[in-house]
Figure 1 (spheres, rainbow, N blue to C red):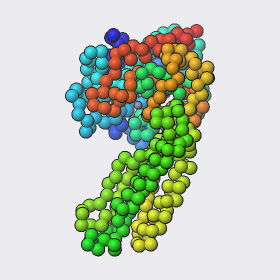
Figure 2 (cartoon, rainbow, N blue to C red):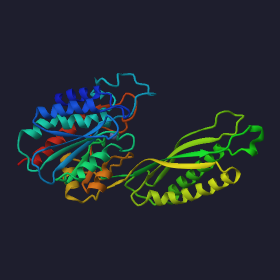
Figure 3 (tube, rainbow, N blue to C red):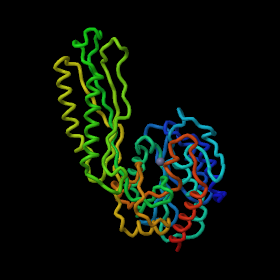
Length: 387
Ligand SMILES: [Zn+2]
């Protein structure tokens, strides 16, 4: 099966912009703005106050409350350190697959949406279709917060949002929330031959890692459990640790990063209360030896989970349009959906082409058949909203 030509032309164009999260996305946004303008669609850029990056918002159809917002992020994860056998920023095709960084996560969805714009703009719609394209999603749903602030003062509010993250076009209504933290342990250095005179930052960091692992095991064994997720409990994981300079020096610093991915029932801040209490006891122990010792904690990123009720009209409609009747599809990644849902009260689902099996990996690809399925979904959506 071959995907529609217009979608492939657009996907080729989008992949060509290297919008790794560390880069500007303004050139890509300019391309999208010009493209939309060709079909008479005005769009607004909501700029980052400090960085050369922006969100894009556009409305097609009547200026009224309601309608559907199609949402996706324009940034991608890096290719550095990955063993690509193809050009990551140039679309290539083979055996019904399209390869390139972001094909699945999530420029494939953006290409499908843009390819459907001529159709959206051609005839009057009874309700608006909004486009909301963000930046810096991959580093903790950072950029979209500025768009949300903008939408909070916008005169009209969309009724529903489809986040086009890869779900193989299943309609997904829930995912876990996440909080990521960094811990900096500041000890006191000395010659290793006199180790008891120093305060070993790595030893204290190890106690913290071990405490977190005990919390992880406790969650795994005792829950709470939520069957909509796999694994069906809150996970706690330390991802990086760095400390010390040489074997014959008692290390004066050690830094670690950990995250908690939590189910709807849990409040991450409540979960962290005993953690902060434990860290305080360690801090006091360290400072009893040397007053300059400390343990500093700061939040790297945080986004809420998504928990959209199954039986709402919008979810039922989306399942019909996507021809996705199963309600047991699970995703193990976060989206901007919880932010739209919590801050703007927009009924949000996740539904997009491709599979996260291929996301974030070298030789990322999307199946042509997935793009076709997404186009068909958008076509049904447009027909549903026709006057
Ligand atoms: Zn994504």
